[in-house]
Image (tube, rainbow, N blue to C red; front, side):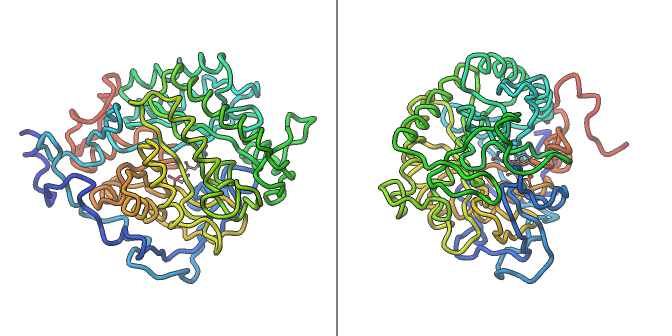
Length: 458
Ligand SMILES: Cc1cc2nc3c(=O)[nH]c(=O)nc-3n(C[C@H](O)[C@H](O)[C@H](O)COP(=O)(O)O)c2cc1C
């Protein structure tokens, strides 16, 4: 009652629960943006064109205030409303949807503000074993109130690392080190998730740190030969070897084995990385998969390997634990992977027991024009959600609590994922609780941080 009394007034209450409430702007037919950017690469590999925090969209996108690519019912500013429609949760309270629990499979997340995967490049020993850096980095965001804390792209085999300083999950020493981190995250009331990855033709690159060289790390400096569906280099990276059918079998088994280790390490969630031009996206995209055998060609051919990976991971992952897949929902290039194919793929993923599709974009090829702006990938999450009837995550320049709340209330996505805003502000959900009118006593403050709670009378 206290809760309802204190925040009912500012909100237009609607007795709706997420999925039943779709915004017209979320339909695939009306997608468009008013800012255009030029992306040249993965955004956290050797070919980032800008590291300006306000401009780098994490997938090589750089905002550019030039003419519209397409006009649309959803412009870049429509994601930041002053007033937000609101929802009533199952308990009859009017807590912001962003801070209501969400259940996927057998796991209930305390809220819908999640930390997106972010490479840290801080395994200085180059053995894939997460360090105190990872404990503090991930642990701080669990303390900060996020519902799910996802790790960086974590390689299923050493050759699958983006850089020599990436984390991995191919041996027991890594399982043990991750266990310490998942335990800490759980103790803070958050769920932990590992993003399992193979970087394909974008592997073995220098870490994306200011002042570091770009491109492929040579063998005598800790680099290794790369593999891909086709023997074609990405930008100025070294050319990969074309994967054989035996390589594909080994890849599928490596994902399954890493999944079993993820379970032993105590992770609550596995996310398969099939985005940003890394190996599984390379299989999907007609811009990177030029094979002439049954693993290339049409849609059915190109989805074969990623679906084999999904099946193997789902079989290795406890049934009640959620499985997510991150996709690049469009390559932003004519003739490339697009939203329509993403919807088709997402239907197949849902049939295979994938619980949520995390919708990013870009990264397959250099030079894509990416319409960067606030919430610029939200329409992709909305299109997949509506078209495939599967829960989705929205990511990409979601920075403000009211903006995030509106995405959820409008039914465009089931969760929001934050990357750069979470770097700047590890306790972003606590500010969100304050700005959305939630009493601090109900917000996810650790007891030791309660004295620092947000309140109006400073
Ligand atoms: C430092 C950094 C590292 C990233 N590493 C990964 C990664 O390991 N896996 C991934 O899927 N995306 C990665 N991304 C992309 C983010 O998850 C996210 O999709 C992107 O930054 C857009 O979200 P934002 O606008 O909230 O930053 C990274 C982004 C940043 C800024």
